Image (cartoon, rainbow, N blue to C red; front, side):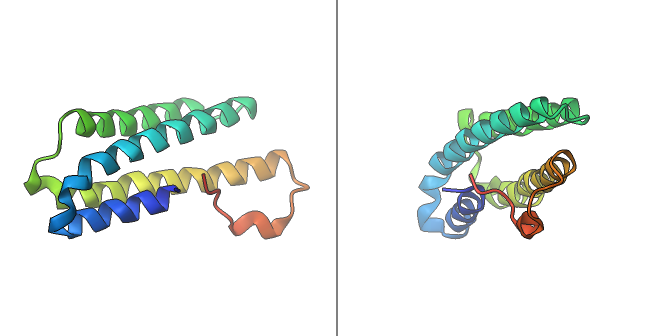
Length: 124
């Protein structure tokens, strides 16, 4: 399952009142996925001597702390929609934006990569 799939599942669960019992497991899976994603991304950034690594680590930590708090302290029913928008508009946009920046940085370090890959965002 990829990040977009997890986000879609979370949105589906929030929208469907009879599936809201699945919110906690989906958040747990999202936290686990992003934890692995960020670990791999930071290792790649370190190998590339990526200049913006400290800011990325801080952003990653903030996202993971937010999700961990929601896993440890379930979201109140009145906050489902708000948190769904937060995941979609802040977390997913942030991760996607950073992945695109990483592709650009990799291209700078490895200019011989085929250009048709440029539009491809990695799927984990």
